[in-house]
Length: 257
Image (tube, rainbow, N blue to C red):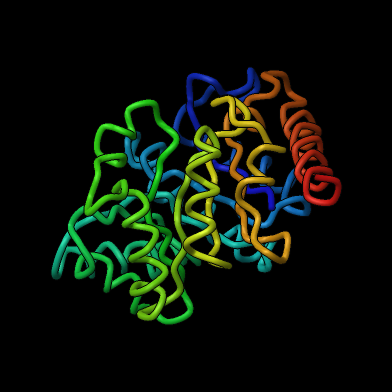
């Protein structure tokens, strides 16, 4: 169930990689090599690449994942949300340019804004539902016909969007009660869960709240805790150690909780 988020922050790179944008690819590839046999998914966050003009590096990293670890799901964390031709272009960017297996999207503009993603065959659309940030309740908890908006999103995903194409949801580890409510609505739909590790989400609580009837159904993301476990030249070894610890904690909670 472990997903490693690829959030390459140049300011936090190890001492052996301080050359700037050109080192992003080297850093991510070393993390990928160190953890690829431990994970179900990698999740590059597009902003960390595009903000410093590293789209070519992102293309190379995505191709590297597909080549070296073809059974690992590649999730492009882009949180796209637009309409019409623009949505179609965002879908093409994720699925064609970067070759992602799935992409995160924002449902605020409604079903038609999601259709270009959902309608792409054999690709996944991961919809923001109850996000892990502190301010998420400002809108996501607003009541809509007697239930909070995030549950309306979950219900729409289960009843409508998954009929169009492969669909999953994002629910933060920092809101386990809400995660349990969403799981009760969506049955076996996959849920991407950010927020463990540096953001403070508890693995055991997440597993108990979010697993499906088959003791599966979660993609549990950790980024900073793994990527920046160590700033020395042994950073990849340290990342692997933390990834193993996280994977083992997930499996322990799955099979003993």
